Length: 623
Image 1 (cartoon, rainbow, N blue to C red):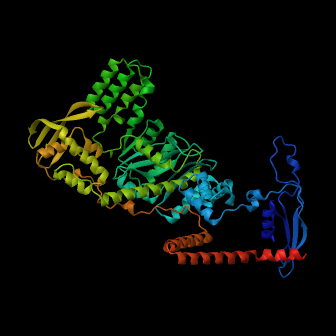
Image 2: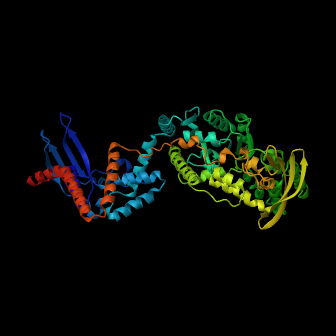
Image 3: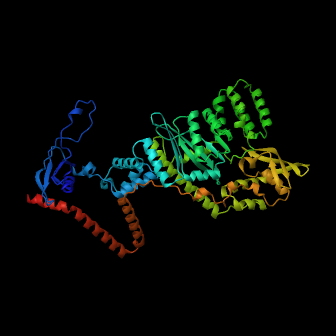
């Protein structure tokens, strides 16, 4: 009866609703009144409002009243077809009672939302598929409401409870998943940390050096995203855990660091890079007392214009400080050069520079270049990780939406690493020289790391040995390197010591110790001594492509789509129809036969559902 009245209303051009219904003694609905949606009077409570909300209630009396007997036969008892307002068939599609989302549209919206496609673009694609707006059975607001509902269903109601529920579900599916939530005295969510088994296994391979940065705000609560970032065997940023923090004080960082340390079984990294945040530095001293702490050089040097913008000689100051920081080969050379700059530009009273000098052991490269930092020099790696998440979150992303988007972003990151692994497995960069040493690296290093090694082999042509001195079994070489910098040629001399018996070589540029790549100065000396085979200690496992790593065996959970049994059946049928269409699309006879069969099935199912409406129509005509 309802379906029939809706069809009639659609043709006439008015909306309908169920006014009331009543059940009999057997708890089965026996009476029902269907009315025009404009039925009812305006709410008196809103009549005195200065900004009353629009209402559909206009006191319309159009309605039908029906009842059913004990056999389930329905009869129309009363009909009123007169309306006190205009009707318009062309507007019928916009009434709420006539709008609905098909299973196909729902699935398309869900998939697009999981892929990070904005809602308005998803809706436009549905309109294009329908050919025009007149063929649409929904409006953009319906699509938006549906997506909001699905997001809510994914995580439930409330931030803390929803996140804990979601994390517990993931943990049940993946025992390696780790999370911790920090609540305040009122049981409100304050800080949260989580990581999955893939990241925890990746830490075993790439957790020697990490970066930690909290400059990336991701949600409407202004809670900074705090990722622990490493670098993998391809030189790519890789996520080793992340948190969302309510503040940036020492206590918060201590909680976050201790939680992460528990997650990685108390195997602290050898080195950590952060910005100049004092609270962060204090927390590192408490939680990671034996970890080398390095400040981000990029963050420090970018403050120069702000600190010296008033100086007449600011250009010269910038240039001299940059040159001193990057070119100093020893701590003594840096300290002498620093005093010269201070005296030359009369900067003795500059408190900012005085603070930097006192803390020079944490940011000037020559003070820690003998320590391995896996080519990580600034927190720009952390910023690149933030840029990676930019495709999945934005400034209005809620907290509970973010933790779900994290999974999709990580899935994408894992796939990209897998693709680069495949490229290093299936391809090889040709050698640029005839040296067997280069061929040795070519056979074992990933493509990206071999290119870095190859740059040192080709750079050997700019190196000349100036002098040698021998002390027992150790020979010291002075190697002059011609460096091109911004179109200018500079010559710089490096000291390389070589011990033939152990084939041990050390250059005072310390590229290998710092970066893990043998420098051109060392290669020049090795080639001079007819070395054809690099000792294994100069081929790092970290950069090899022929190593099977544990994290590559870990699957990333990806259960973003909420699938009911009906939805799964729909997907199965859709896949089957698509495969069938691909098989017979070129065969006119079979295509026509299948199309006719589909039409027959649709007509049969439609006629079954509308048989009740036909019986109602017959009763109505008879009455």
